[in-house]
Image (cartoon, rainbow, N blue to C red; front, side, top):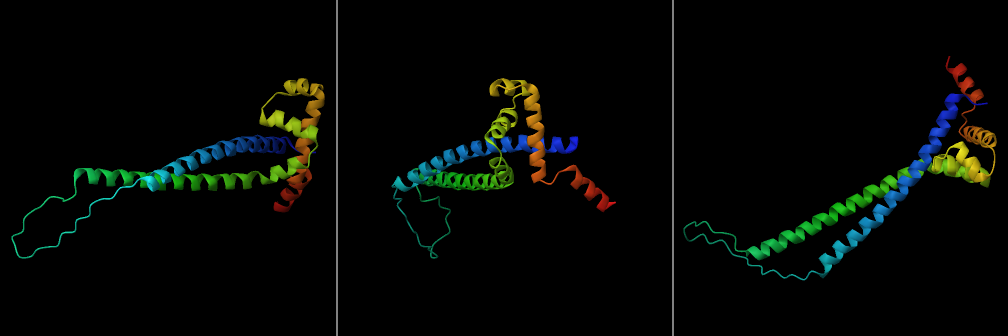
Length: 183
């Protein structure tokens, strides 16, 4: 037997599990998009063939100091600026990709226990969990979809949550033992 508090916690974990799975898919799609952007920027940098005339002028100490302007042409400076912008954008894109990949890894690690638990359940239980917590359907909608009664689905829900609680050692007896140990 599990308490109402534990029941709510397990259900919260199931809702978060499906929320995280959806978020992982969204982030993976964004990573693919950013990888494409990175490839395009790398292609632009690799195929841009610009040779700038480099003029090195030596310092002349013989004459009077005269303020001179930059010897590069305006066009050359603009080209260099544009290339630097592309390089900066490439660096930002790579950083975003790495951050998102790290986030996906952490989220996948967080849902790994629930993945394992759900893999051990029956197909009927998996279907129920998918409808209830993944698609957030009501018990009435689930009973219509699975061609059962609402009471059957309510019992199924309680049994599934109880089984998941056992895996996480959230059973009431364990909680009582912990409380007695602490007191």
